[in-house]
Each structure stands twice: as structure tokens, then as C-alpha cells.
Image (cartoon, rainbow, N blue to C red; front, side, top):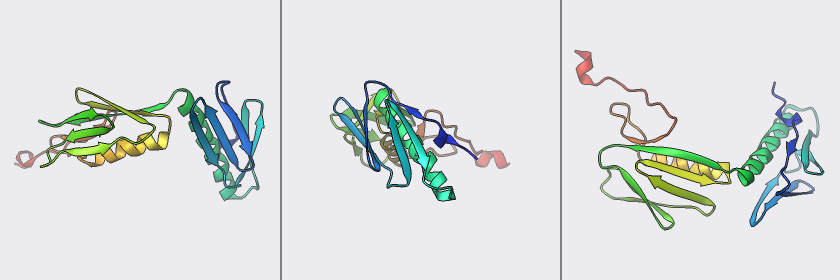
Length: 178
């Protein structure tokens, strides 16, 4: 069984951390992120180190213990380094462009798809690669999943929008059966 909750989260000096009961607040410049633990774990701040302790030895409390530790580590990583995902567009005539706060996608439909870029995300397009950056791992992943869902890759020719590190398993067409 994993004991990820045992590991302390070391917070860099440029991030200010405060613990107010069940709410942990992380501040770096203008960016403020909060983590509400709902009172499921005990959070202790010792200088720039966060430690998490489970309230009891029940299975549910142990699960919360590791989850909240991982969420707080992700917040720290997001505020220092940030998160990014890359999507690749494959297909004749498929293209994307960023126009202000809108990502314009031409994916073989009868109409263009305009995806509004959410606050806190940054998108860029270079050739056929869309790069999504942000400090919230969940927002970056959700935006990438929504964009991919407009035209998921198909197994015969591989056309569509896929993650950069995703491998599409190709199927043989009708001619292969003969």
C-alpha cells in the first residue's frame, strides 16, 4: 500500500503558505490557490514544510491523507514550474489558430469550432501542435480532453486530435481481409 501521505511537501521560499483550520492557502505574487481538506486530515505547517496526518486509521482517512498531500504538491509544482500538455492535429485541412482568447479549430466539420480559452490557461499553436499551459493541473488536463473530444483520432488513418505522447493502434482496412 502506498504511503505517499508520509512525505512532507517542501514549499519554496517564493510561495507563502498559510493554514487556517481545514483550508490551506498558497500565494505567489498575484496567484492564489486554496485547498480545502474538509477536515479529513490534519495539516501542520513547520516553516516552509507542510506535513499531513490522517485523523484515524480507517481506510477512507488513509485515502484522503495521500490525496490531499498529492493535491498540495501539485499546487506547489503548478505555482513554481507550471503544467503543460501538447495535442497534435493530424488530417488534411485540419488546422488550429489562436485569436485573442479563442482557439479556432478547423477539424473537417461543416463549421469552425471556437473554443474559449479559460482564465489561467495559455494556448499556443505551432504548425499542427497545440500547447496548453497553466498552473492548475486539472484545468490543463480538462481543456486538453475537451479539445481532443472535438475530433478524437480514428483507428484507420489516424486522423484527428491526439495527445503528443499517445499511440494510436491502427486497424487494417477492408483490403487486408482478402
